Structure formats: C-alpha cells, structure tokens
Length: 79
Image 1 (cartoon, one colour):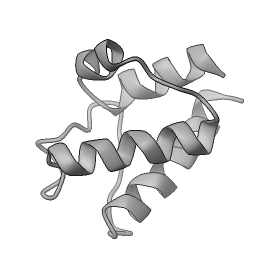
Image 2: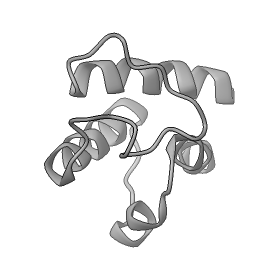
Image 3: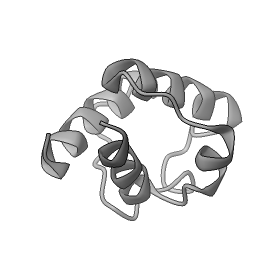
Image 4: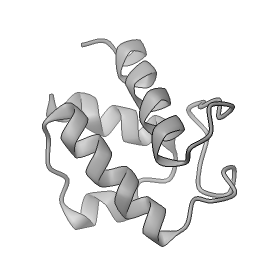
C-alpha cells in the first residue's frame, strides 16, 4: 500500500469519525485543525484506524504522533 492510499483511507476515516465530509487532510493536520478532535474522538479515531488497517498501536506511539503525516508514516511501518 502506498502512502497516497493510506492518506485516502485516512481521509475516509476522519470524515466518518468526525461526521464531516469537508475535512481535507494534509501532513500537517493536527487536533488543533479539527474542531471536534478531543480526547474521546482521539480514541474513536485510533480504534477506527486500527480496525481499517488491521494493526494495533502501542499507547506510547499514539501519544507521540503530532500530526496526520506522522500517523500515516506509522501506519506504513505497521502494514
């Protein structure tokens, strides 16, 4: 799977989790850029990503992710 394909899947996941089809992800997108991205939605987002990509994150890894680009890179390492 390419990084572009991972980003396309992430775009779908974010739109679903936040119920907002207008979200446009970039490498720099972070929780400050999406109004409803709080700690509860972070959990929902991680669960949705783990399910979609059939991977499991460690809690330490999740807390170090600063933006969507780093999330995509971590997903690529796992798949």
